[in-house]
Length: 68
Image (cartoon, rainbow, N blue to C red; front, side):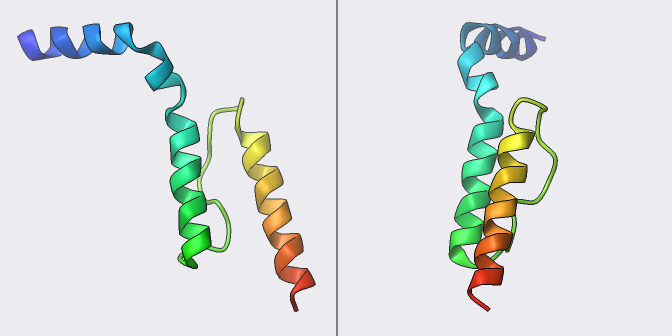
């Protein structure tokens, strides 16, 4: 019970950490693309960042097609 209380308090104390979590996921997925492990950024993201992911995936597809 005490751990749960501290976990909630920590999350409330750092709302920015919670808010940037989707951007961190995008950064990790983009690293996978750079490493060749992925061709696109997989997954669904919050509506605020999904357009960015869609645009990045479009650019990756255009780049891949241009290299053929």
